[in-house]
Image (cartoon, rainbow, N blue to C red; front, side):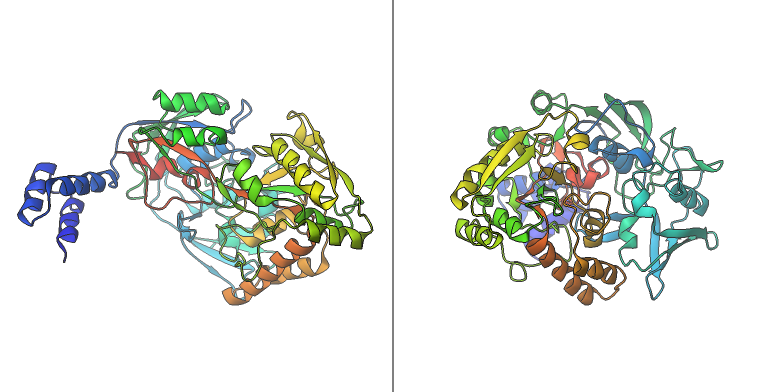
Length: 532
């Protein structure tokens, strides 16, 4: 054992103070300065309990509700999913699927029936012991013809959900789905106490690391640590105050003045200034969040794939990465499967599409449209820098003989009046943890959110085949082929994967690995972070 390993073990055991540690270090020949740095670093990396944590969140509204079925944006995802409640499964920072309220799960050979073993002895905040009845009621809350749940599409394949003894719940699906355990980690599908023929969501009671103290929609939410939390070594803060601060400048000022201890969604133009502040830590995390420029493939001229390819070659992604998002992310490749997905095609399997005006001209000539003129409808609510991105695209496309008229639309009403309605517009997606999830919701035939109105028979066949395939190697082959189809034939230009940007004061302790499936450590920062 080296001297350094032995000293780190002393700190890790928690049985030695700084003074004694320095004496022990001196005895084995480690200098005071080096030993002091080692001790401070180890202490900072050791989670501690206590303190009132205040964070500035985006995505709030006065219409926010504690009903998990109606959660639509990041503020309530963080509060409900990350603090108040748990799911059957969760995605670990490594990207691995692990059990949360379910200890384990098994599938039938055709992956159409799934049995989850429910963790025993877990208490709700009101002292009630969680049972299989609570799990069943929580899923039924999203099912049925009349449901208004945002998770209706996710639970639609469930034909039956029933108890199998006191600790098992069985889900019978309408077909094989190897990703079903991932689906039940969706933030809408939190487990709430059963009540009458439904669930008690109104009280905010859950099994999470924090219990609800106060809730003022669109303003703030305060929660207090659950002393009986079943997860060991989690939920370190004594309390958490969640402030909705929509304006990036206001969030930044609140962070710098100590009104809050962390924030997400930094104003990209000021990131370099924040990085110079010695009292702050800035940490971008690149996950599956990406911007898109969907073209309606059933509408001329975008119904011609050579036109679509010409536009894909006419965009300078590298310039957009540097000028629009200041390097906070990575290049997109007209493929929505991102770095947080396990079956993402490698650069060898799917080479990066480069800016190439000559190839763009080649495809325009094939399409018989050597002087293409099109309109791109954008608003900054589509994604940060969307208007500037459109204007930059219009400049680079000139080299290919393409004229892009950038139509700036109002932010208000953009998602209801422009997106899905105009032939070419701007959009963004937070990504999904599995390939099937994002392909099914956005790229499959008949999907409600098929923003490019894309239809590809081979893709849809592969989608069903891959969904029921339990062999990982075979699934990978299928998903890589599907990614190639989207890349080569799809109607969405995907310029960039945008990093989740975060800043925190130096007294916030962070784990060695931070999740990239969502912002704010997969929205689990309330239970994974601590005060140093």
